[in-house]
Image (cartoon, rainbow, N blue to C red; front, side, top):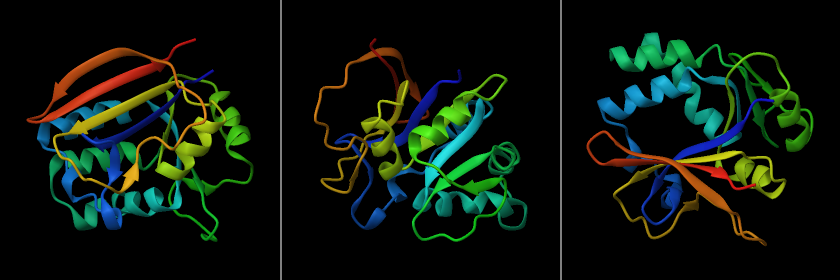
Length: 186
């Protein structure tokens, strides 16, 4: 069974987006972009909500809109990854994506059971909250930026129980970002 990993950039005070869905504070430098590229190579499937899906659509046409070598390399890796999009408003999706037809647990179980190596990545606050509530996430990865936003979209939803984790990796990536990787303590 493939592990499910929830991975996003996060402010020091725990937000993945600032007020008004501001993400401008989380633009990766060259070293961090390289790290993202290497991690993306391990993704066997990606689960996201509408907002993140729409944010990531820029990679579908990268060759027409970007010239940076690292951006183009990321796009080349990202596009073929199968994506499952949860949305109450989208009627269709493009690229190698499909709209979810089942609940989060069923969709993740289906993706986990596919043959081959890799991980199932999940991103987006609302869909991750649903997966956390169903206890479906095996690893939590944070790219912690040295910024305090004060409010916005939290990385973790309010929980009705404690979530026991164990730190398995920490490192500085790029000029100012700290990468933290936790696994569920079982």
